[in-house]
Length: 257
Length: 199
Image 1: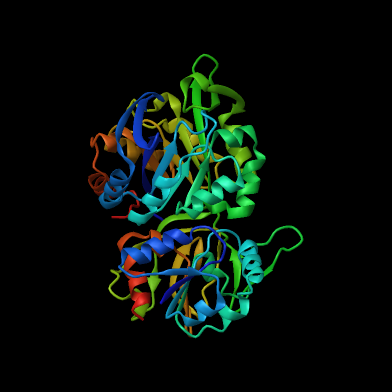
Image 2: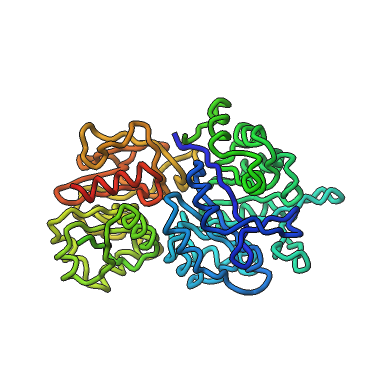
C-alpha cells in the first residue's frame, strides 16, 4: 500500500535554513546540506525547500545548493520559491530536484500551472497554498507573498475555490499551509484539511501546526492527507523522525519504516 | 563505461549522483557512438512521452537506442518509452508512438477513488530470483511518481498495485525498466542500481 509521507520542510533564506513563528522573525537553524542529509538518514520520506524570500523579493532562488543537496540525498525533494517560468523550473529540475512548487507566481498568472504541467508532466508540479482563516468573516483566504510580512497580500481567492482551480489547470500535488497554525505547534487544522480533502483528487500535504506525534496521527487518520509537512519540531529535535514513524505504525498509519 | 543517455528531459543529474554515490564514474551523452561503446546505459526520464520522443527524434537517437545490445535501464518515463505507444499525448496527437522495444501500451492509470498521480513510496512484488532485485528485502518501498503505467504483461518482472496492478519493473533481452525512481528510493534503490551495474 502507498505509504503516508513525513516531510520535513526547510525554509531557506540567503542560503541558510531558517524558521520563524507565523512567518515572521526568522532565525537561522543551520546549513542546508547537513540538515538535508540528517533528515534523509532519520527516515524522512521527502524534503521540501522553500526559498521564502524569493517570491517577495522578486528574484529566483540561488540554485547552487539544489545540486549540492541532490548529490548527497537519496530521497525525493521539492524546491519552491520564485519559480515564474518554464525556464526557472527546468533549471531547478536539471540541478536534481524532483519537483517544483509554485505559490505566489501561480496566483499572479494561473496559466503558469498549465504550461508547467504540459512541459514537465503533472507529477512534478506542486502548488503551495498559504491559507489564512479570518475569524471575523469566517472566510478561508489565500495569501500571496507570505515570505515577507510587509509584502503579504490577501488575494481574491477563497482557499477551496483555489484548490479546485489549480487542479483543473494541471497541478500534481497541493501543499496546504494553514497560516494561523504555522510555527505555533498546537496541531494541524483538521477541519480545514478535511474540507480540502473532500475536493482534492490529487495528493494533499498538510502543513502548519505540528507540535507532537499525536498531531501527525490525527491528520492522517482524521483528514486522510497523503503527507504531513513540518519544520520546527524537526529542526529543534522535539520529534525524531524515526520515533515518529514507529509511533505512527502503532496508530495504524501506513508508513515506510 | 557507464553512460546516461541525454534525453533532454530534466533530472539527469539525480541519476548521475546516485551512480556516483556507489563509487562509479558515469558519462552523460547524446552521441550515438558513445552510446554504442558503453558497457551499461541508463535511459532516464522526467516529463511527458511527447516531449521525450520529440527530443530523441531531434537527436537522431531512436535507431541507436533500439540497436543497443548492452544492458539498458529505463527509469520512469525512460521505462515507459520502451513500450510500443503511450496515451500520454495532447490535443491533435493523443497517442505517442514510442520505441517499441517492449510489448504493451502505456495507459492512463485508473485509480479512483485513490488519488492521481500515484506519488510516494509503495511496495512491489518481484518475481523470484530476479537479479535486479538481489539482496533487496521483501516489502521494501520504492518511490513512485507517475499517472501513466504499463499494464502487467509477459515482460513484467515486478508488479505494484495502485487501484489496479501495473508493471513496476520489466525486462526483455538486454532492456530493463523500472517505473519507480531507484535514484530516489533510499537504500533499496541504491541496491537496485548496484545490481544493474553488476549484471
